[in-house]
Length: 200
Image (cartoon, rainbow, N blue to C red; front, side):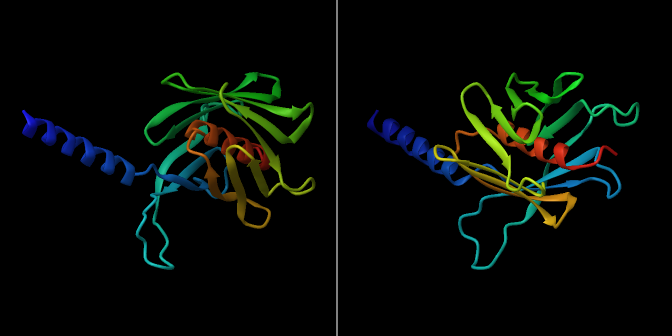
């Protein structure tokens, strides 16, 4: 009996160590699928690897996508489909004629709401999953190629264009606390790309 108990504890300890070592990927960039259209995006992530050599960058892998629901049917920018790390869902305007309120829903039941902080101001957004609420802001008032969350409780989330004033490719710097879900992060990424790109 003591041997069996030690054996069980050993496997429990090994399982805990393995789960601590295998961390979730971190979203690192989002880019348009095609150079001449903003209707479909590809999301890339890097795996957190603890023992990289100095100066060595982690490799990026395709992690998900975001695309207009009615891509080939009609010019409707109010509904989007996404897949992120195997999780799927939709992003829609809450009301068809109101660009100030959006809702992200996963097929597993997660809901994230997005609304402008001030009526008519598309440079500041409140993003909430009913547990955590974050404020996403454009860093500048006259140029929309840098966006930031800077929250004293949950950390920072920073998006910026890889080339100045070219909204086809964005870098993502994620320093948010682990409590902030991928769905919340995706909602903020969506707001940035939607509000800074031409509807084409």
